[in-house]
Image (cartoon, rainbow, N blue to C red; front, side, top):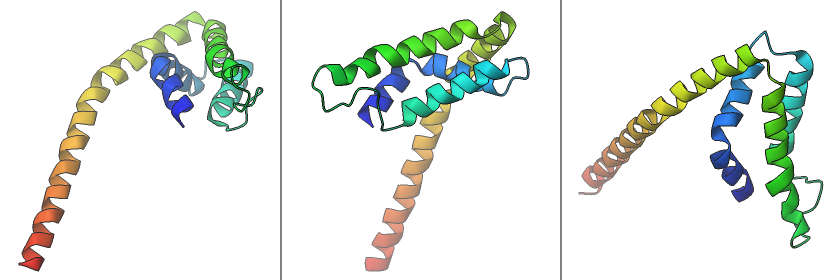
Length: 122
């Protein structure tokens, strides 16, 4: 799980561009298929080199996944890539505000639950 979160943090813009380009009709089918395979490999617990091997086990995390993401980004047509990058920038810019609002909502909800339990007990 830590591996997945680390890769997502480093490549969140590129991964978001890939996900947005999957829904674009201008993206070639072969590229869409390769993107789906890359996402499945990223989410899969099975690696080409098992993580049990001390140094080599991290090679696919450090080399293979970023290389696949970079190659797939280059395969996207220019128009699709620029449009998806613009959309990804907008989403990431507003994601921070959404995260703050969700956090405030959850804190308010927990406060209401704690207050309700306090009223029931006393």
